[in-house]
Every structure is written in structure tokens, then in C-alpha cells.
Image 1 (cartoon, rainbow, N blue to C red):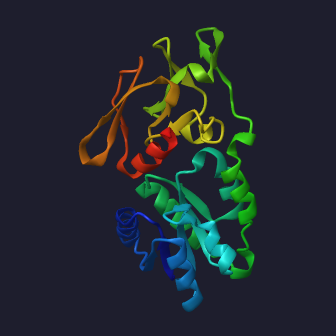
Image 2 (image 1 turned 45 degrees about the vertical axis):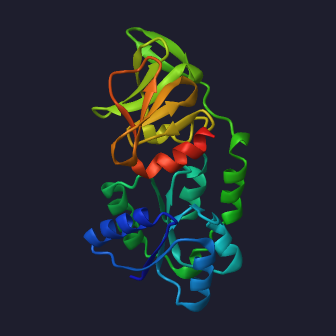
Image 3 (image 1 turned 90 degrees about the vertical axis):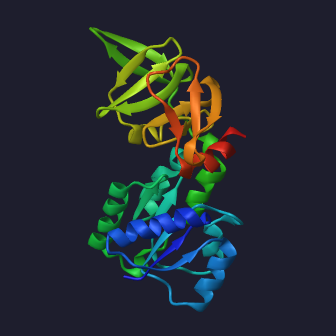
Length: 251
């Protein structure tokens, strides 16, 4: 299996390479920009599988496929989970949310190996994905949630939620009134339901609401710590792989 990585952050590319080696998947090439990738595809045999970051240093990676016809299978490595998940599901072998988790990577590789897609079947509809990336706010997002409190149902407005988090296999909404409510869903299901302008997944465990951030503090290993107005049960740490995207989201 011939595999390449297209990722503009070289430490992230090296980390993914190491993780793939542990799965006995050898990476032949690592590319870091649209321009570099286009030149490479024009002069080399195309791989069986591409691990593809969406946002590269010189543009969206889809620009590669505007310049070169590539029929390789693709696994997206992306921070754009909030509004492009459905497109990724329909148009790729799989997607992996950053920061990349060992288990998610293993599942994605096994999925590719099981499918063994034929090149002629890998014509991806990048235009549909780009439309979602450019116009994410045209979608309707969930504005309220219902939770069970004893024998009653309580309505929680999305803008009242300081953060969503997972704990002991449960998913909770922490509200501005200082209460935590168990939801009948998962963080993964919430990814396509939350307003991306309001909520950001800072780690595998937390989504935070920008309107309830009280403070952002430098943390060890180039990470950030977030303080919310009321939630204080656990530390909220922006994982190192998500710091750049988090800063861009804040702006």
C-alpha cells in the first residue's frame, strides 16, 4: 500500500507518520503545501491512499485536485468537523478529527483495507465540500436541547450552555446557571448540530461556547487553558494540535 501525508504542520505530519508506522503502514512521502503537492502529483505515481489535511499553508487542499486529477483514496484529517462531516462521509473513505486519536486512526486504516476502493470509483465531489466550507452558516443548527430532570423535561437553550463535555461514557451540558445535565447523545453526534461560530471542540472531551469564556491562559507544552464563567469541575485544555485552529476561530 502506497501512502502519502499532506499536512502543512510538520510536527503533526511526523506524529501521524509515527502513528501509522505503529500500525505497520509505511508512508512514502510527506507534503506540506498545495504547490508542493501539485508538483509532486505531476511527476510521481499517485498513491493508493492520501491522508489529507484541509487547510494548508497556501490554501485549501482541494486546490490540488483542481490542478491535477487524483483518483487515490482519501482519509481526511480535519478540524472542520462542525459543518462538513456529512460531506466527508459521502465523499471519502473516512475522516479523522484533530487531534488524531490512535483508535480513530486504526479504525480508518482498517476501513480502507476492508473496502479496497477501485480508483475509478474515487471521483470525489469536492465542489459540494467546498460549498459547506465557504458557507457553513447557511445551515440550521440546534438552538435548544431537552434533558430529563426526574419526571420532568427541561429545555436548555444552546446559548446558555458554557460547554459540552464527556465523562464516564456520558455527555453533559454545563450551563450558565452552574448546573450539569446529562444528554441523550454523544459529542460525535453534536458535531453536526452545534453552531460553529459559537462552539469549538478544543479537545476530544470538550466543546466550549465562545460567549462564556472568561479567561485563556498559557499552559504547558504550547497548550492553552480555558476558564469559563461558572464551570470549574475540570480543567479545560486546548490540545496542542488544536491551538492554531482555536486562535483562528476566536478571530
